[in-house]
Length: 279
Length: 234
Image (cartoon, rainbow over all chains, first blue to last red; front, top):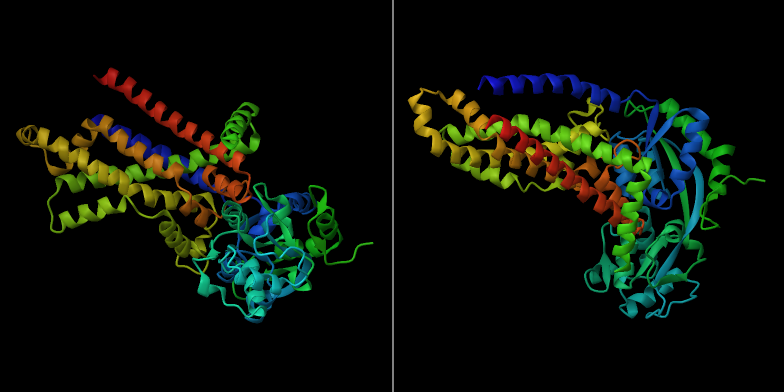
């Protein structure tokens, strides 16, 4: 009995000593900002490549939360991030118009591609029109793996279906399969089901489990994929680290950041193209 | 089959090379889960014993709820903690979202019912054995709790280890409240999820093997310590 009380007291004392120590050492003693971004920028390895350069230049650490664009915007709306780096221009402009963001800056772009099984059961290979290619997939009821997660890529896909005058939701669960997960997870599903999918090129090049999938459609100007960066408005959320967040944005759209983006290669291929024209 | 072979080789290579990123992630996983389990034990052990010994209205319902709470869905716990800790939520000013502290809180919520429910069962069984004895020495309810917890300490270790197993293996809650930030909140399970989504299946499986080994090591250590203590105390 006594012994037990003694043990309890010792444990409580140790915890009382350790817990605050642990939490403070974990918490904000470093200078850092939180960036809500997309799974594509993380899965492609871009951020892991360029952010250490930014930290080396400025001493500011960047903590990235990688989510679908829709979710990333909600996190930023709640004030849980200082900067938003995503790829759906209309939602980004809405975010600024609603007063949650200060200003949208163009950062970089790449493009989306439609991938699918090498045997190409829908026969879309080398089609120049992405909407027509999707229409063909629907017509043949070929399996298509959709993000289904309100991400930038998902929104782009829905736009293309709309252009093809098809409502894929009606076929959900049959040939149209919504994974409700990130780009990589959806590609894993597509690879497993030998399905078609829309993906950004960077994630595709980096993806390690391609299986039988190859690129079928690319080059349609509607497959353009621009990224924007926005500082969260400290007028809405006073704790937002506006100064350091702006330093990050200035770096990203400035010469150092743009050069870092241009220099990033996946398997020897450029993955993102900086918006600023570099000589 | 080739994937499993590559995974095994990857796991061995990671461990032999003492990959610094891996060590950081393993250490953070252990720190978070051990801390969460410690807090959960401090709450769950006395709570479970109290429910076992005290008679009060609604006790049976409480026991059913407690047993059901062992199966709390991690994503739901993650979501609730997220909403509480978000800047837009009631605990927002603490600025705890996307920190290891948030992960400890989420895991503690998941693990406490497991420890409390298993403790209640163990203490109920012990109480049946010792009821007469406790009465004969005039032991009150409070002293009965501490006595039975102490007497059952070796059996209760299993309850605590079950809680640890849940904490270290869980991904849904820590992913939501931690954000899987590299060098800050990235733990074993979230790394495995990330590598899987990058299509690096062999690396993901290799990390999985390391995680399982780690869980075995923690359980082996706890059992060894308990055996030694048992021999000393008789």
